Image 1: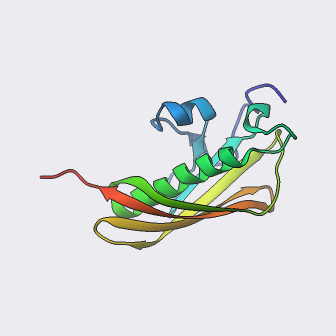
Image 2: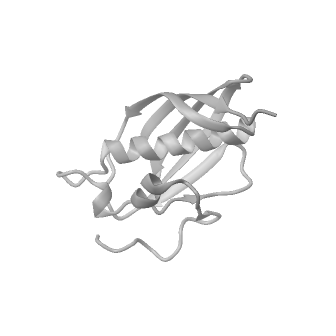
Length: 140
């Protein structure tokens, strides 16, 4: 699988812009607007895989970090910066299919957001994550 993936993402997902150079290089990423929490997706390509042909743990970790940050931003209205990210890998995925993820804030204070989420491929959970995010707000 060497192309850019299929022509269209899963139903309801739109291209996501503004994630920075690192994410643009690893994407493209998609998001589903209008949901509680955050939902995102990417099509797994050969470049997302390790030497044995499985989606690289670093790719899943980077995907989950952005996904959890999106949920923290939605819940707080602030810009989240990762303080802690914990990822548990549960199953393996290969290039040639969509990875989708969902995340939700479990607690939000003035300065900190606690978030959980997971990455899935079809009906299988590939990884679960929890994160703590510093909430950056503009000073007035």
